[in-house]
Length: 309
Image (cartoon, rainbow, N blue to C red; front, side, top):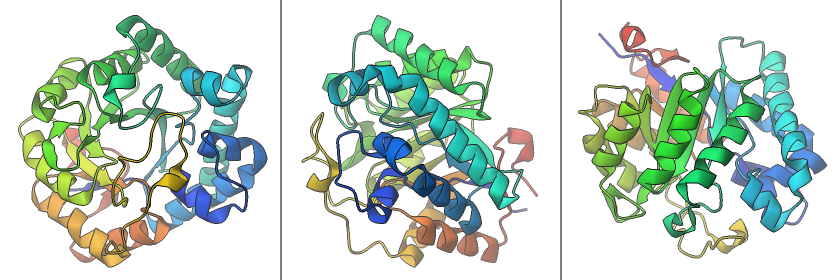
């Protein structure tokens, strides 16, 4: 019996960067919601056409802290409404009603920098604000790129209060996939969010090799797990408030190569896979083709009773 696989989409910010002619800004993916929303709809639609059964809301940089630092805090509700509209439009145009929309609870201040995480009370308050803005139009919540256990727990608790299914994705040390970027053990952080109500745990926005190493840390949790890697050579150069043009992409992650790596995660027990930054629709299409060729069924739900065919 083959396990059903939940296939997520790929990265949005870097995909939009490739499609847009406008200069990159610290609010990049959120800024596109205002300037070129049709690009967001098209990217979502292309991921669905590639085989993705779950698409992530394009609100990653629309947090209260980032808008206060890099944009206009008054745009908070407008940006989330636009992100919801784009995702629903893409799903409607695709005709794939089974595709699920994942609300996104990202790092509040900056990716990859656990030292930038606000205090617990601020995290609880602002993750609840994000949940409130998204809850009217999503099917699940995905807390993603969590680099600190406390950050992940606050996001999880806020999402669980919504009564939607909650998935949590950690960003791990690129040199040691068993630890978060904070240095904390991945396994302990994963157990904490599962105890708080997370229904699935993943590793994301880390190099594929680190995601591979992380799979063994997640296999004993008793919940579905998986990963979606990035295609950067390194993220060290990206500082809070910086722009992604400081980063470079790997040249050794062709779509077929990425698909083979992700298949290795599934062989370790993963049932949720997809892509993050620099992993585009072609990668997801290759992954879908690879999985279906191996006899896996692609689904949009990771309930334990829906993992076998």
